[in-house]
Image (cartoon, rainbow, N blue to C red; front, side):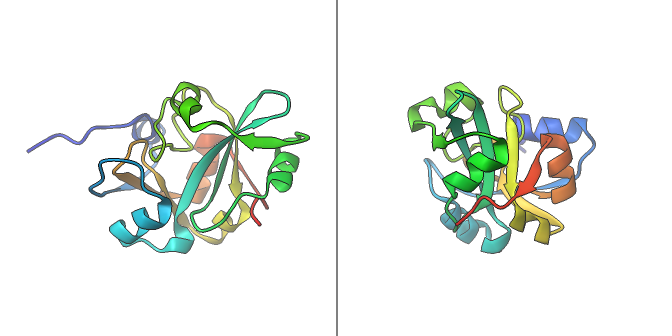
Length: 158
């Protein structure tokens, strides 16, 4: 029996005694959140993606939003007190977060960045997020996620 490989996200949840459910799926490279939800059979509206953006100040921010939605850059900037925010280039994701594209979890990054979950996450007891590697999804209670990520809820989608 092979041992499941733990990610930083899983280790942090366990260290904080936060219950989570791990769902795995077969995938060799990046696929979007909609395809992940299809493969794992989880509800789209409860499935969230993680975006990393850079503010005009040069600071990085983490935004967690429903997989079928787009970030509202003005609303996102306002939520973190920036004039503007822009997506970081794909080639910088690993350097900034420690995760790869498609496996970027809002918890367990190299540094603790300001983290904002779309307010719609508050409609659920738990949401599905990346598990910290391609092929892994975690179901975690929203209150636990907000606590462990030091996150907040705000309207950040169009």
